Length: 296
Image 1 (cartoon, one colour):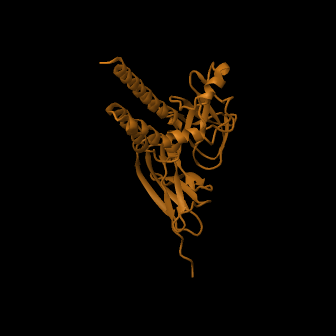
Image 2 (image 1 turned 90 degrees about the horizontal axis):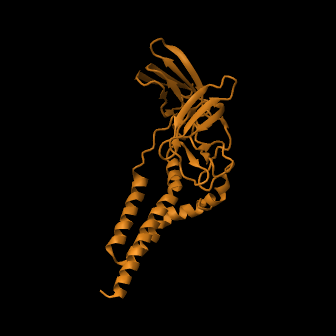
Image 3 (image 1 turned 45 degrees about the vertical axis):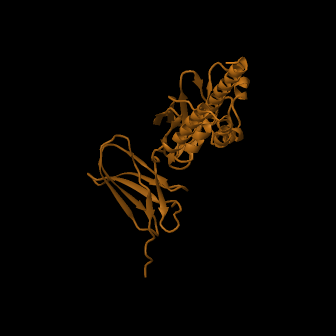
């Protein structure tokens, strides 16, 4: 073979490698956008590295009452995508976040991130409606203060990440199309398989609360009264009043229970939970309230 032919093969092989690395890099850089996409499909918060923007797994989060007693009311550990879920009743709390090598609150992100909105800027949080804490939590890696500007350079802006996430398939298909070789197509379809896997294999967990809605309007019902009773003793255990989002939830121990949902102008709803075997079970259902017939 001529040196020129060998040189062409070497250049093409190098371009194929660069193409494969570019596809991997795009998948990595657009990962926060994928997490944000999934967050819109189910209520949860994300713990993420404030410098790189990448989700942080295995972070312990505790919700502590902002009172002298300092009681832990809920705790969770973020999964491999940085997601966590904390059930909270209305009130003021202190959020304790801990993982070796990271500190919270963040000194770099106080108001917003290039990808994540609804940032938790401090340890103090106010929950106005029953449900789950969905604040996104930035954590600072320890020992990178002097290099923070360098790392931040590689933390792409929100618009750039969305362009990469949604435009990259159209961009990446150009190289194998004009290259007219098998290997680049293999790389491209591996990339597309990962994108499809990301989008369609995610199964959001059910919300950690129930929603009460009006049958006609499907709007949340505010000021509805939800009560949970012990079936065995027919005893009232707890009462909650829904906020603007119509949410409620009760955390119960193994046993038998029933819910009663009431609001003036609506028919009373009763739901039985005859067998609860799990400790810390979240007792909640989405409920549609029907208007009561007018008297007379």
